[in-house]
Length: 541
Image 1 (cartoon, helix red, strand yellow):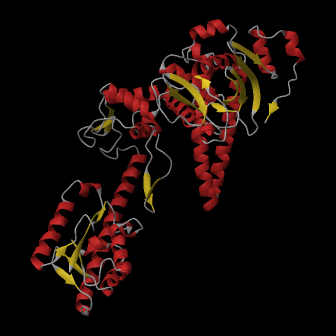
Image 2: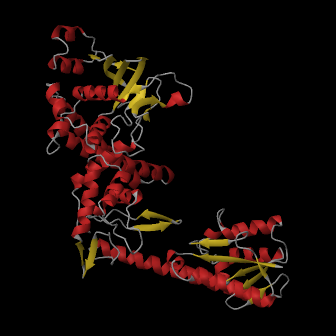
Image 3: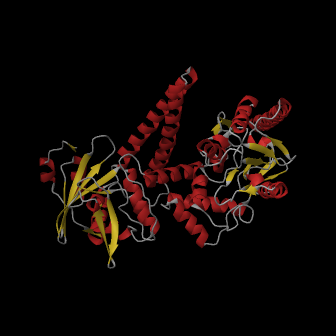
């Protein structure tokens, strides 16, 4: 008869050690000594890496032991077969009642269970003495796991209590810090890398572009030669760094609830030395939010050397996103619905589209692109955007928990967050009203200073339109005839701001919106009499 080997270890530490090789060799040796045929590992390999028997993870729908049991159920593994395990605790460290039920089920189906560490065999129809021995072994295994889990949890709770008292939790800390005595000190060269990551993010680089930049510069990861043998940065590592408030000096204690790692209490501020300013952190969050897309805005999904300024902003009149394409050395924009056969709109040439992009920038609050961000209102708005993004995310999580487990504390916290969001939105509106006076008067001067050549410049312009909630709908009316509708997509109803027509080489702007009529008067594109005759009611759709 055949024997089947089940191998399991529960931690990454065991995976990096000798656990797998030892369990394989024990199975091979036993089969040779007892005249059993070990099932081909290519056909039957029951191997649970990093799955806890104490938590029953190996018996869920994806576990290999569950797969073995299903083969026994359907007869693929016949009665009379042997299951080889290193010890009974590899089979289960679950509560003794559950473990015994699984064990007896195997024996009832004619499966012999062999524990390789002591060569003990548990066969169908064994006497009660053998059964009692297995029960005692399972009970001890469960108790050892439970005791170990309690000790580890207690140790971490003690460390977290000490952390709230300002004491270091140990050498485990962010990779740009090192514990020296009782003080966390900054590793300067690593802190410089962290600051570079945030600077690149605020200037428009996505996680993949940042990782590629660091790799091209030959900067190794902080875990090179220890965990990551290649030393190359990955987008996931960059994302984790940008999301981490540890760069601000915060430490967030966690605990495991039903196998999930969840925050425990409020974060501890000023626990670590900060390597990034709070202003920089918020700017990065605002930039990431604009790249990932907001309501009604498509996220940027690709990184290219020549950043697509229209990414997530330009849409076909039918509603489909306009994606940039290339053919025979030429670039153009095409509606995604055209490829599905549901839109007959034509292509828009890249050169024509970029000319309109510049024209749109000259009409909206875009002076920050040529005046710098040092003390600009746009920078302040970006910080507010970032704070609102995080606050809304926290509000959503708190609200879900409150709906499931209502309490006075969570209700009070929701009310506090609602008041804070209202305050931030009021600050936004005041800044927007103040910035409305900063408009482009000289288009020629603006175009001369505008950077739409560098990656950072193009990305900054794209992010600006997204933060302003600008959405552009294009209608292709002829080979060299397009009409662009520029809308404010802030609310549920989109409000038309102005139109741009591009016929041949001529560009004409038209509006019924009072604000943009005033801009056109200042730029010499409309006289005051015509502006006064306009109907100022906003066009909504």
